Amino acid sequence: MSFKKILITLLCVSILPLAVFCGGKKGDTIKIGAIFAITGPASFLGAPEEKTARMMVDEINKAGGIDGRNLELVIKDSAGSPEKAISFAKQLIEEEKVFAIIGPSTSGETMKIKSICEEGKTILISCAAAEVIVNPVSKYVFKVAQNDSDAAQMICDVMKKKGITGIGLVSSNDGYGAAGKDQMEKVAARNGIKVLINEVYDKKDTDLSGVLTKVKAMNVQAVVNWSIVPAQSIIPKNMKQLNMTMPLFQSSGFGNIKYAKEAGAAGEGIIFPCGRLLIAAALPDKNPQKAVLMKYKKDYESKYNEDASTFGGHAYDSILVLAEAIKKSGADREKARDALENLTNVPGIAGVFNFSARDHLGLDIKAFEMLTVKDGKFVPYEQK
Image 1 (cartoon, rainbow, N blue to C red):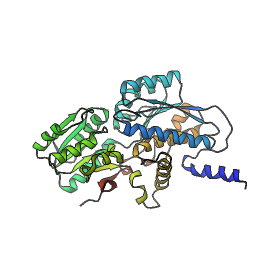
Image 2: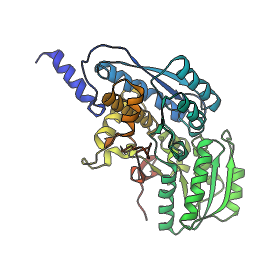
Image 3: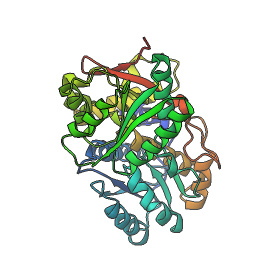
Image 4: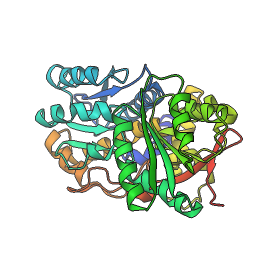
């Protein structure tokens, strides 16, 4: 075998999880739109998503594309603004005539463009977590981030084992915070846990000591914060300053090590539900996600010299399932939508996807693990 053939073979093997063809015929490109919060307060989500999407598409194209067709990314930076997301979604559908859109990064943006994609009969694969994105199901709208209701249940399971019955709930005034607050209230009530105080703060706040002073006065046994903005690092710092020693639970939006690093010593002991990327090396070899997780982590960190995050993983999963659907259906949007809806047993970063006509997420609560911060790192949470 010549060196060139060996090189091509290795390249094909390296992207085996995508199951794309190598060396296919040349043809038209498949244009994919992407809306990410690359800048602004949600850039911890959007920046790794943008980098991951570029890395994935480059890798697919270098290996010959999908059935010989290269992918072309058209990326828009919404800066987390729902208004910009609306404008970009219209541009991508009406002017760029994209095959599908991946993103946006946040739930608030996604909810604003759902109807636009639905009316434009354009596949949308959101990277956001709010369950309302896919419940009720819309024909063209999918998502790859685990449900916030499952995250809330994971938190309540830990609380019950700790004997916690009264909590303080704080959340940001954006789409993600509002959806998570709603789910946490419902799930806590269902689990016999009382929300003794419920405070919503501005997503741009840089000091939350006033909010937490009110929470402290209610003698809560634990605090739950639901946000994706940098407040996730401010909350633990302010709690430490106020000598609030009760457990702090965060949502799955805490799954970027940058938040823990910014929180510093105050972030030690934070408990939160998240996917398995952050503990990939500790997984048993038989875990169906481990090979995908380890490859993504290695590829991303060697290319960008920064830690991989679950948010970049959502972009990975978006392109993964879209590529799988196109492989099965060809570059026909309606057939690809149908194929996507019927994908099963696809190991990704967030979990093993099993879509159906009634489930446009394809993940359940088993996609989560409970993690904590120990010595500045994410590690599996062990119930005491």
